[in-house]
Amino acid sequence: MRLAANARSASLLLALLLALSARVRAQAPVPAAVRADGLAALVGGYAPGEEADVILRSDVELRARLALFSRGAGASAASANELAPSLLDATLAELVGEALIAREAQRVQVSSPSAADVQREKDRIVLMTGGRDRLGRLLDGIGAREGEIDAIARRRAVASAFLSANLEGAMVVTDGEIEQRYRAEAATFAGHDPTEARELIRARLAREALARNIERWVRVLRARTPVHIVASFKAS
Image (cartoon, rainbow, N blue to C red; front, side, top):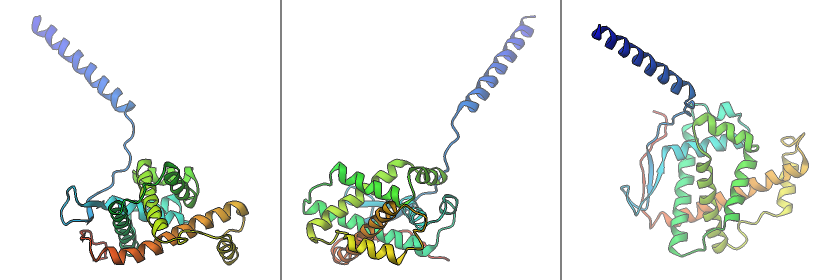
C-alpha cells in the first residue's frame, strides 16, 4: 500500500512539474532572430585587447542592411540572409574609417560630441530608414537592438566632431545643394511632402559629406595605425 501511495504521489508530482513547465514555455517571450557573429577587423592592434578597437561581423551586417533600407529596400528585403559581398566590403571599410577617426579624435583630445549631437545623428538614421516603425521592423527582423543604433549614432557624431574641428565648412550642407538634389531627383520624391523630402536630402548629403571626408583622413591614418582585416566577404 505504501509503495502504491508513493507511486501515486510521484505521478502527481511529475504531472504537476510537466504542467508548470508547459505554462512557463507558453509565457516565455519568443526569442529574436539570432545572428551569427565573429571578428571582422581590429583597428589599433593585431589581437583583441585594450589597445585595439574590435569590429564584429554583426556590426558590418547591420550597417549594410541599414544602407539597403535607406535606399528603399523593404524590411523583408533588407532583412534577407544574402548581402552582396561588395556591399559588405564597402561597409567594413566605412567602419574601419570611423574607428580610425575616433582614435585620432581621442589622441588629439577633440571635444566629445554632446547628447544633442548624438541624437541628431540618430534622427538622421531614423529619417533615412523611413521612420521609427520601419526601423523597428528591420531591427526585429534581424534580431538587432536599438542600442546598436545608438552606438552607430555616437560613432558618427565623434567622426563629425573631429572633421568639423579639422575641416572648416566640410560638413556644411547648403540650401542650394539641397535644392539642386531635389530638382535632380524630383521623380524619386513624387508624392512626398516637400519639407520632409528636403530634410531627407539634407540627411543624405550630410552622410555623403561625412563619408568623403572620412575617406580622405583614412588614407593618412592607416599609414600610421595598425589595421587587421579578419573577415573576407568576397564570393568564393
